[in-house]
Length: 111
Length: 453
Image 1: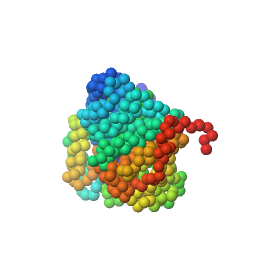
Image 2: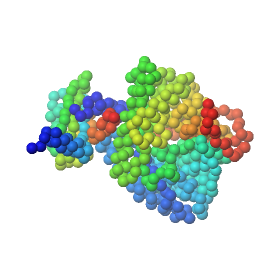
Image 3: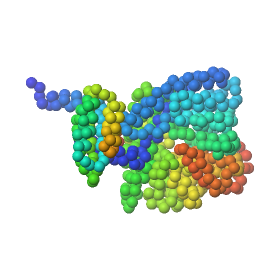
Image 4: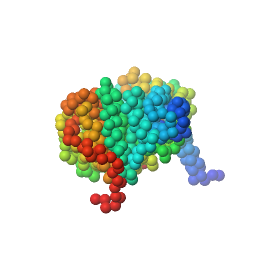
């Protein structure tokens, strides 16, 4: 039987490799709070086949702020479609929606 | 959360509210294999090479902009100094080459192409002379071509024959573009210690020691630095320098990310990131306003040179930490007409030509985008160039002169260059002559490298 150390080593190595090969997407949503924002945004993501792997939502002063990490490596649509559709729904809801690669933040804020 | 909300909001604020952007993705292309004995053959080879190498430059940059969410403002090209290709030609007038560069730039969709240049810090060959003499006509007959001439270096001293000639060429260039307020001069820079990998215009060229094709990145973000400083109004200079360093670190990292990815997708080498605080006429995108945020009431007042020195050094330190390959000019630019804060300071008579000269001793370039009276003598312009070159030679740094003697305008008049080049009042310049000094000709020897007080 494999020891725990070996299993965790394999899993971690695979996870890190996956990180390298499949850059994740960060979707940031900013705007005035109201009921149903998450439902509307996630519906768009589900429709395009994106997988939400992390999500964080808070009310920042009076600002609704939500950040999501998406894995779109198995999605049916390319990144450009995600960006387009998410920005469109953002406009409809009166929210600022930004979709960009996670590397932007990692590089800028982490040594 | 893998990335904190604070980090995400900070990046979005930088882009949305503080005008943070990648100012330019510049592809350097060597034209050394384009040498031909006839000008027609040379032009054909140059055109083919540029449109082949840079075919995907604009589309790749546009893709990156979307994916990473950071605006990329300009896509540009720099080429081998054209004078190097002109020695064995059958033709003295090189305007046709400039037109070819212009046509190639339009074909691939870049807004500027730099490298109509000569390196003559020690002496001039036939090709160098041909190039310099062709500058006025070349710049008047092209839209996107930029020209630069290096007339001095710390190793070689100052080629005063070239300085004298460039005073005349600047005047001539203004005359050739008289109906557009001498705009040709906005595309012409005279350098000391020119960098070989600078991605910013008008001084970009692809140096002779560079690889076949490279991608150099120019990042910018005066607004980001200014806002960071405005948040710490009462803190001491150590904290001030630290804040600028941290900010420029983040900006440079974004540039490096884009540069490496662009180089990978274009299948060429990644060159350098040039972290320069390059202002634009947009309010809030100003280097003068950074100095004012530090506590100088108006740029040009006493204290300005010290503030600029601190800024320039802290920017370099932050940048050097962020990328293995920082190059180009990396520092703060002070182009007067392109910086709304500088223009305001000139209008209020706080910022003068002599203060600007002092500032160039500590900033990354030199006297930049300065509008002078149209009747300024060629020898006076040569004198301004000689002064600026000597600051560079002695201090082992790059300095440059890009002045526009605006035809038919005098001190107090206003000139509009339009777009990124901005607008400016005409600055006052001393009328006292230095004609006999310039007329001596020859070279000013290279300075001693020891006894350096």
